[in-house]
Amino acid sequence: MKKNTAEFAGRTVGMDVGDEYCHLAALDCEGGLVEETRITTSRKSVDAYFARIPRSRVVVEAGTHSRWISRIIEKGGHEVIVANPRRLALIYGSDSKSDRNDAVSLARLGRIDVNLLSPIKHRDERAQADLVLIRSRDVLVKSRTQMVNHVRGITKSFGVRLRKCSTDCFHRRVKESMDSIPEVLQPAVVPMLDVIEDLSKMISRYDKAVEEIARKRYPETERLRQVAGVGPLTSLAYVLTIEDPHRFPTSRKVGSYLGLRPRRDASGSRDPALRITKAGNSTMRRLLVGSAQYILGPFGPDCDLRRWGMKLAERGGKNAKKRAVVAVARKLSVLLHRLWVRGADYDPLRNAKRLEHLKRELKGSYVIDGIEM
Image (tube, rainbow, N blue to C red):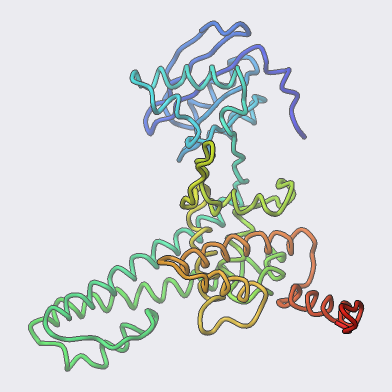
């Protein structure tokens, strides 16, 4: 239930959060500074401070600690506004920046107009924990990739070119061809292969956990997996990132939320084509791009998305294929949202069938110069 903001109009608190200390500045209803203090960044201190002050509007900048801090403050009956740091140019561009001044600026912005802060909504604790599982897996995958590239690099410097293979079976393939690696290099390579093997086993366990969580807690992911290239990992990450699909007025807004919308810098007749904003969750954006690459790749099945993306790629230009991949990722994010909200079954050639049906209806329906069209 939405809180009545009038209840909090009398007092606004800006909170600059650091790893060790939080600086707080409180304003009264007229904008006067009535309190400045500093507390330790701990659950006990935060709970004690907000338990003793009157109900207030509290402005916190999004960051590492903002999730658990906002939960504690809300439990105390206060209104919490989590400010988007990308929109706080007034703070980051200041020539007199300090923790104290930042807290005062947050309070003043929260008192004047909350919309200036582009407030964000943190997901609940259960969804956050499940999303951390995906991010932990992502760290292991990046570490394994870095190690595989390292092994390929050091062997190449000794004149040995390792065979191409998937990352999952890399350690096995290299161990099978260990005779081709110089003996002097093996003490450096063998331990790396053992670590890569261990990482692959741990990633496999994460994959099983992701699939089990998706199946038991988030059955809506099954509907999203109807789209080729969208597996348990991508569908679960999508559901956890969006969390509430009805908070978007239209499905098209999801592409902007995930940072897949091109930037704009239009002025007069000048409107250059710019890169995407890259706002929002970077892991989710990367997963969508990976799905788009599969859809446009050699193994991607025929579907409306593939046909549309291939037409974009055929327009030519230096980065036509890259632009097509990003565009398909953006369109995929919209499609997944529509499937989720409507609860509909996915028809990969829905648009193509509609177009073919329209052509059949129009055929023979009009005559030009005595010729039936």
